[in-house]
Amino acid sequence: MDREEIKVLLASEGPAMKSLLQRAQDVKFKYLDNYVHLRGLIEYGNVCEKNCLYCGLRSGNGKVERYCLSDEEVLECARLAHELGYGSVALQSGERSDPEFIDKIEYLVREIKKIDGGSLGITLSLGEQSEETYRRWFQAGAHRYLLRIESSSEELYYKIHPKNAKHSFQHRLDCLESLKSIGYQTGTGVMVGLPFQTLDHLADDLLFFQKMDVAMVGIGPYIPHPDTPLYRFKDLVPSAKERMDMTLKMIAVLRIMMPEINMVAATANQTVDPQGREKAIAAGANVIMPNLTPGEYRESYFIYPDKACVKDMPDQCKSCLDIRLAAIGHKILYNAWGDSVAFTKKAR
Ligand code: 5AD
Ligand code: SF4
Ligand code: FES
Image 1 (cartoon, rainbow, N blue to C red):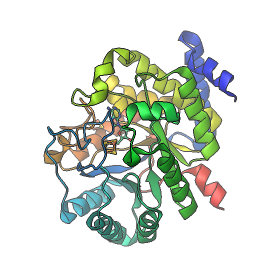
Image 2 (cartoon, helix red, strand yellow):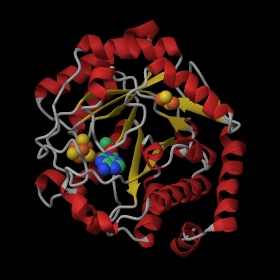
Image 3 (tube, rainbow, N blue to C red):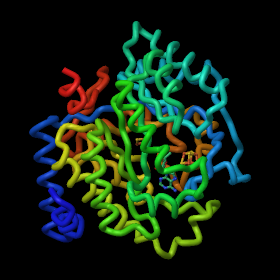
Image 4 (cartoon, rainbow, N blue to C red):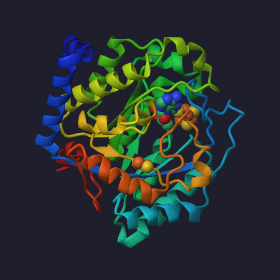
């Protein structure tokens, strides 16, 4: 598909949009069946060196109570993921590059790998790091890495990030290349409904994913956070319904373009629509990340307001997801890593 064709699909409404989402679901069923993969999400800490203009965890936000889980808390979450049959965990945190942090993550990855003889898959989402750090974590046993580009347009990137060396668009691209060359299943993604974002930007985002030939993508709606600088442009943000629909169309078009990648139904979907995650799955996504972070810390991982499942306990999420997914004709594949088929085929 070229940019113009993509734009036509992204602009579709009513019956045309409905048939796009249906077509994407058909493609997914054909290539990946009706399975959904789970990643137990562990929000390791909310200390962040960066200052992204949209995110509640930015270092400039003095209102956040900062925390970092203990080793035992992380391993407890991972054991719980294993017991619940989730098959994989995702370790996520604000960005830190101090040696202590790098060593700690390496240690934790090794310890998680010891659970039941390496039965858990591990995804990391820990921001921009040096190639050496990425390699150390890979050698310790992590095999997937998520680093959203947030917007593939350099111009828009610098409208939502401060323009300084710490927030370099080029460095972000270099990191994605490093991750791929090291051998990670590499994932990226964008937010939908940002102020100043146009249909051209969104179409280019999809072409970017294809050009980068990534194994995983996360697309989710932008949610304005009152304690961030970008909030003053909230009047430029489309309505919740518009952001939801555009997210669904982005997922659907990408599923048609890249039938075998893993695509996550972002939790942010559920903030703009109570059925948001299920809608994302029905439109072509195939991964969900239920939260395993211990309850007392969840409210501090305040990336954006009204995050889903902040008050729910892990076992509740499990039965909740079983029911919600069964209702839309999908089933969870338990006790499996759920790797990206696109990646696995290429590796062969
Ligand atoms: N709304 C939606 N998603 C956000 N993220 C950060 N801030 C927001 C927000 N206000 C997403 C970014 C980032 C991930 C940690 O959370 O895409 O990659
Ligand atoms: Fe930090 Fe990530 Fe939030 Fe940026 S988006 S401020 S890097 S946690
Ligand atoms: Fe957490 Fe439904 S997924 S309660």
